[in-house]
Image (cartoon, rainbow, N blue to C red; front, top):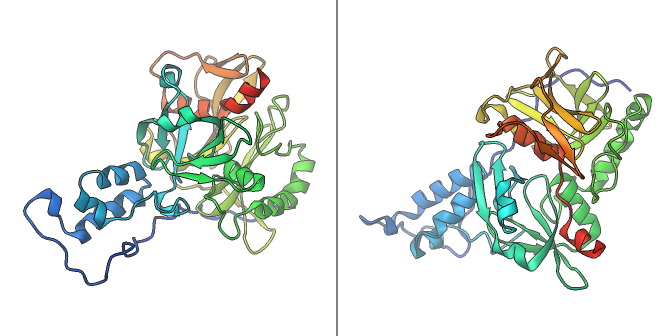
Length: 363
């Protein structure tokens, strides 16, 4: 099966215009006044919409916290946990030194705007953290049987129950909101696997492992040179295939089984490790080069970061020495602080924090 000709990389979907506020009557005159607490409704909604356009949902929540008038002007994100406008679609959760100091504090990064956010999440004390999705949801489990699963939105504090294991898998795999939108369920994954099965078999690429495990995207560390990743981007499914000396970014066409090879991903860069992959807007992250794939190359108990240019198929090492050394099941950065953004993002792809529930049950 040959990949089709190159085409443009799909750009992320922007948030739609805000609908009328629930419970507000059309034609209601805007409040006017000299004080901040009486800003017109339409102006407040325009400001709120700008935050949602960049997925800075925490700023939206902060806007609502100013006063009663501001809260009444825009929708409450906790009213409907399935409202996709308030989902952390472009966020990842990094482990850093703050995590060791507090089990309720996490570092989040907006992969489109490059904004870092330290977030205190007191709710984590009441649940076991099972996993985090690629776009920033927490998958939680009750501390007592029957261990009901929940999704926590760290930007709004909203909790949503997870009705079935299949939907948990979809959430962890694609980072999709629940319930998954039409055409974005695990059936799309099955279709993709069928389409690229021949390609993977020819090049001896390891297929994805279980959705929820210590190593969800590959079957182990032994086959370092060949990996396959699935990534939801702008509502489309991308497949990143890494061979020994070649990396290809493929897009599965929705109307057929045809795979389109993308040689230009615009101003985006892709990071892949043995655990996860993600795409970031290179313009917002210093030193990250666009139209490249950054990956970790393992050398027994250490690993180095490499950069692969999709334009000319050239590979170069990011640093002269090892970037990671293996400590137990994790790879620790050995570079001098402060770490670069490339090192932090690579650390996110090479490491996955163990499930607190699994650790508790093992004791």
